[in-house]
Image (cartoon, rainbow, N blue to C red; front, side):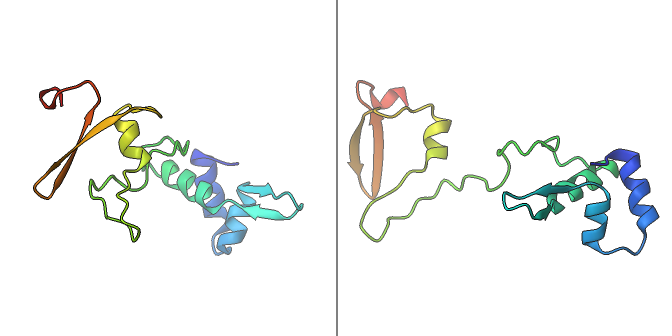
Length: 121
C-alpha cells in the first residue's frame, strides 16, 4: 500500500482513473475468504488525507475510540427497563457483580454503590 508522497504521486499519475482503479493501483486491496477481491476505500482515503497533511487524530490505526460521543441520556424501553450502556459503566470502572442501592427521588433515580454514602459520589 502506497503512503505519503508516493501515494500522492500515483494518484496524480493516474489522473482520470475511476475510484476503484485508484484504490486498486495504490495497493489498497485485500482478499476475502471466498477468494474475491475487496477494495479498502476507507484505508485509501485515510492515507490520502494523511499524505495531504490532514491528521484525523487516530494515527490511522482505527482504535475504536472514535465515533459517537456519549449523550448522557437514557430512554425507558418498551418493556419498562432503563438501560445504562457499557460505555458508561466502563467510564466509571464498574465490574460485573458490582452492586448498587437504588434511591428514588422526585422524578429521579440515584444509584449508590453498596457500602458508600451519598456524599461519596
